[in-house]
Length: 402
Image (cartoon, rainbow, N blue to C red):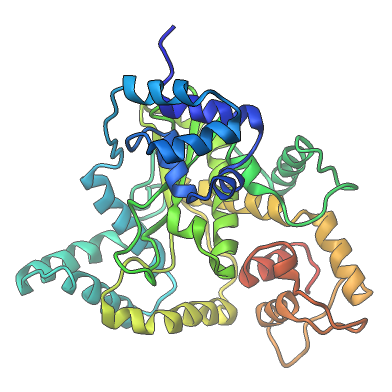
């Protein structure tokens, strides 16, 4: 049997101890992304000082750790090739601009590409190419960068049941569930699913958003296992809105790895399913200044959109809808949401006031601290560790706000 690499050995020790990336890295006083890189053999083994921490924490012989680190040959693995990174940026742009007005969309694109020191002719060519690629294609064809395979039919009821069974495996049956859902425990399940942190997508500036949130794929290091790859910046950020986005991304990608990756293998030999775009890709300095207002504008666009549910016409549309609905069901279980809501408002549902639209009112209910009973210490969205918009959508889905 082939000897384990240093990273594989450390990962097996963490698996036996039953601790997650975040807990282990906190105990060792190293960053989660650094620990992830070590376990994935993406970097050289750490210094003797850090090896001593591993030795003490896992209760293993330091000399053996040192000898294993010295014996093995390591290479820095950059699994995401340059051409894939370019595709990822395009995909992020594609996701970002769907809810932005055309004029602002191309202002954004021009700023992004102008920041890359391109000539005027190159900029025009890039923008023309994006004009042809960004809109969704006609019915029956795929959106940008989608893998061509059809998901199986899954109704909302089936997806709710799948989420319920997933929680039950953690002992979180409806009567024992308390929010928030420990999504990191599901996404970091050594031997089955690996949580991999990457800086490959992150911007050059600390205030930048990463150009991609998450990706699901068959593991390139552990045959038969699956990877959920997320932005290290998103994982390590103390900001609550990023934490909420991380949770939904993990739940979203978790569904891809348990449902869509196995299905994809029957269609192709590809190992990477897809990427989940973020609100904004890396921006030039001038656009970073207006980024918060764009984020708020996108939320306002959602609140004021009266066109109804978006039509699902491609396989990509259906896969993303399935992953999104499952993620909502996993992070915001119906029974738990209804119980928390009833405790706060002493009713099973609320009717939208005549001077507001349903989305606007659902957003207010998701974020309010003041209820008929008392002043709450945290809003609903914070209790379940999701974004205000995600909670508002869930309240509408469940008919709690009508």
